[in-house]
Length: 271
Image 1 (cartoon, rainbow, N blue to C red):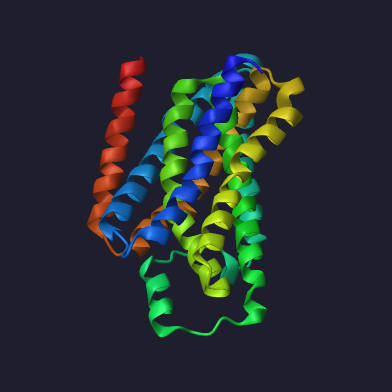
Image 2 (cartoon, one colour):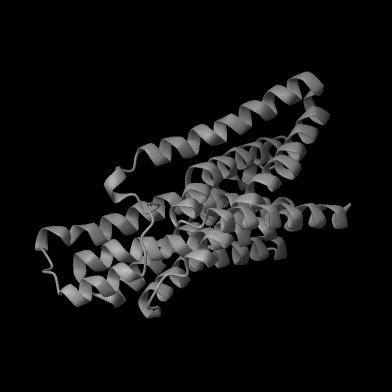
């Protein structure tokens, strides 16, 4: 494999294994640092939204306009953006609400269960596999997003990978808690959550194998438009509500402002 492909795979793997980091936090920590999570999720939200409009969608618009002309290029870019939103929306709709890993949980829930020594019901054991599978399905397109962005421009991919990694840490906590409730086994919760995060590099490899023969400026223009739509949807549907759910509204806003400032400075330095 070429060096750009290896770098893209490394960034995608880094984002994916952060789910396991979240599970490890749930495994070892005694309480949830809600201030940090609200701040970091707000930061991640700002990075993804700012990058989506200031860079990814703008790049899609420029690329497709150069190929098809301003009017047709704008149409293709806009359709790509909303096509990405429809794609991730369909994936989200396929997941039952009660098994959705983006419903936030806290580390304290695991300790509370131990203190109460509640009974583990055999009929709940299927939840561990289902929850991990659901998270894997959600992580699949995120892996493709990071990987394909890295193939086109490493300067775009690094902040995307970092934002998705931040997003995956509380997600790892949230998926570990229901697995632990179902099995009473912390190690099983840790490893299943970690393995579900590996869906991101798997998604990257499958996406690359499918799209590699067709990659050109037109395809990258469409992909960048779709990535922008996917990232905006993830930010508004998952990251921002999750940050608010931890109950630290002002920390979320501080994170949003800091994230926008960092990305604005980053783009200025690249000009």
